[in-house]
Length: 205
Image (cartoon, rainbow, N blue to C red; front, side, top):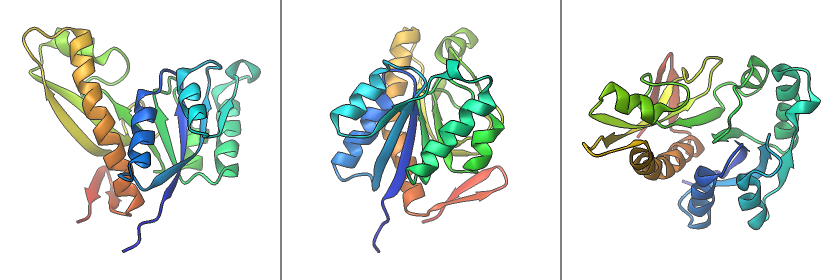
């Protein structure tokens, strides 16, 4: 069976380590995808520099030029569609998406969150996990809906919390799993093996 290479659009705000992992997996032939564009809301984001090194088209869209999230997201959506993007990947994107963008790409936006959702949504999640005293943390790839980290869960990876962990050490071990899990989820999408049934995402064999 010939696998289609899915056209990705990546939204990023920061250093772009998950973006780099996706690029590496594409380059290694382990991920059937190609990145059409990387869009950032931060002009000098490291993610943009990473993309440029591989000849990937980049675009800075300045939030200050727009009155609200909806207007901003409409322009982002138009740019993604103009590039033929089929699946939108959030890679350290620090803006909460409005319904405008989510509805333009229904169940075609993925995010990775550094916790085992539905536990610890939002920011500073490793700190929250340690303060709560959990024995296991991890990461979650999910489809994006109109809530905050509430979309249907695609894949999760579990990371044990060690007695001597701090926020930095736990974050580093979770990030290692993020770099593997995100590409795996994208590959499953590329192969047409993700079926959404209500809140459940089933992986077809």
